[in-house]
Length: 344
Image (cartoon, rainbow, N blue to C red; front, side, top):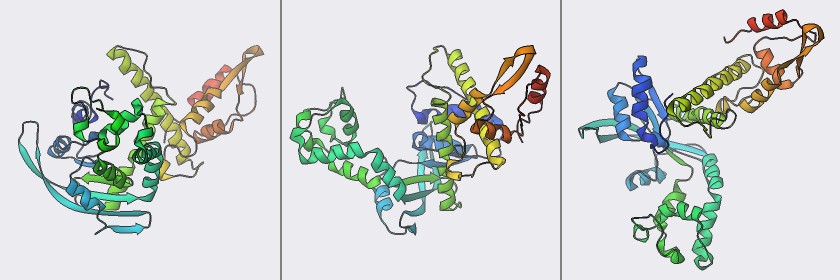
């Protein structure tokens, strides 16, 4: 775990994080799998020079026109179905390291198109795409909001942007400012993904499947931010921030151990594409455990509350815990606690 300042670009965090946390772990070799935020060829070169590999997404919109043309050209695609196709090629690149020394590398470029991803992207960007369409049809009826101003800025021709402030010049005449080639490239890219990898002999489907494994990492962040309330952070010093994050990570590990136990005891069907959320998600586990309480009765006897809760029963069965309906002494409660097997 390594916190960075909020104004640090994602790709600038990789090498310090590897140096501080990973490089001394004495892996014989590992393959870094990452989304587009980490992509930078100096990062990838540092991995190769350390004897490691990478499978990393690369933005199509930030690629060269030649690379985009190859991606959108239907030639050589392997069509799995009407909803999925892919192709690949080996390319040679010359990369500069931090000392401006040039290095030649080879990498495999895999591109694929998915109908499911295209529909999802269209849904996520529907309001913006509708805005562009209406703006083209009747620009005189539009007032650009601050949010729309931010969204549309990357599609404007450079001569209409104030170089000092980044603001749009003469927004009342927005239509001629639009760079329709950029908008066309953006729409064309929906549903397409590009992955670059050092693994030249790895099959394309395996590369794609391994990259999609990042959904499990994304689920970790969603759980951290929502269920475990990592953010917002109300402490200010570096030590307190790190302690807060450490507590959240320990809680996350405990949560994943419980989910793993539920899966390996085969109480729920396994969905590989939604591994961590299979069966009982984090919120439900949290709620069930909060209900696992004991009530003090007369004569120092105890009873379990909410023991018939369905999710709580699933968790208890995963750890081979059976709670009979009876009153317990403090010694019997301790015996139940010490008898729990943490993991297997």
